[in-house]
Each structure stands twice: as structure tokens, then as C-alpha cells.
Image (cartoon, rainbow, N blue to C red; front, side, top):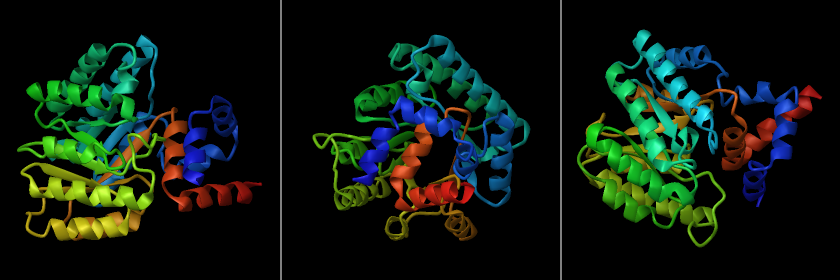
Length: 306
């Protein structure tokens, strides 16, 4: 119930204005978002790569309904890729980027968003790295997978994201578990109706395991995006016959850093999702919804400040 309330709040303009202007908010958000500037993002990436982890960078923003804003988002990605390359961080794909198509014009014109994504893919390819297309709510799933197929014709390493809480995802995993395919499997963080998504946590977890089995048994490159200790243990068991480097773990910036370092120290590829920018509200609210501990952390910080 709490999760549903928080996800509904993530769409509230009034609550967004209140949270964004609360003096404590940005300090608390820095646990999950290293900062607003490209310099903040690159510095965070340097620290993570130095520690043996890899990164994927997300310039925050979504649901763009303005062409100039979509163009600005594309330019932000071109800028961060160039700076990551200049710092030597993109070599061997240690730093890549994650892109939401809704942030680069999908709602305005799907074809335009694909063209914008292609510009980002070109810049990533020139820097020696790649792009993963983030998945958003279920209304965009088909369009995002269609864009993925188009982009992979020229940039075959473009990554996909699938969400285990959607009822369709096991079938999508079977379609994408192919040679050269990179698929990030997460549980999902949007408010979805029962008609398309499992509502019970146990059902979402069971779906995650079924999907993970499909991906791990295929010739593609699974990206196991979870903070759940049980899912990590299951993934390790499923991967025991695979070579290290033929799959990876992924976690969010600021969540379970000790576990991230443990996996990296064991020789696993551990990629950290590093978001940056001013448009942090929706991202932050979804992080609160994912784990009750995050809500406790936020409320404790508010109480301490007051």
C-alpha cells in the first residue's frame, strides 16, 4: 500500500513543488543522485571505477513534451560522453549511458526520439562504449522495443531493459535472449494496473527468477539489476556455468555500496546506475517506493533537520 501511495505521489505536481523546495530535500537526495552537473556525474564515475566497479550514467528527465528540452537532453548526453571519454572512463565500456526515450521526445514523435537516440549511440560508439535504453511504464514498452530493434541494426550492443513485474516480460526475455543481446532485468518501479502487472511482491519475485533463468540459459549478456540478496544468490547459482564477464550485476548509486564492493572484489562485473541533473523528483520518489528502508532514511533525515 505504501509503495502505491508513493508512486502516485511521484506524479503529483503540487507535492513535487513542496519536496523540491524543502531545504533538506537536496541533501537527502544526494544519497541517490551525486549532483546536478556533468562534473558531479563524472567525479562520481571516477570514484566508482577506481573502486573496481563500472557505471551507467543517466541524465535525469522524462515525459518531455518540448522539442527544445529533448534537444537539450541529447546535448547533455553528448557532453557527458565526451567528458567520460576524456577521463579515460569509457574504455572497454567501463562507463556507458542509459537513456529514457520519453526524455528525448518519444511522446512528441517516436521517430524523432529514435533519431535522437541514434545521435547518442553514435557518440557512445565513437567514445568506445554503448547505450542502454531504459524502460518506462507499460504504455511505452512496445515503442521502446521497436526503437531498440531499429537502433541495433547499426549499434548491435545497444542494451534493453525488461521489468519482471509486467506479465509479458518472460516472453520478451525469450525474444531478446539472443547472441550479442544485452538485457538488464529489473523488477520495475512504476505504478501499473493489475491487468498488465503482477501486484504481489512474491509474484514479481517469481517472475524475476523465471526471466533470469531464460536470460542466463541464452547466449546473450544478462544484466542482473537487483538489490535483493535472494535474487543475487539465485543469479550467482544460475551463472555458475558461465564465464565471469559474460553477465553482470547492476545496482543503483547509493544503495548497498558494501555489497557492490563485495561483488566487484570477487571479480564480478558490478555496474552502478549513476543519475544526475536537476530533474530528480520522479527518480527519487521511485527509489523511496522500492524499499521501505529508503522511506525510513528520508523521514529520519527530515526529523534530524527539524
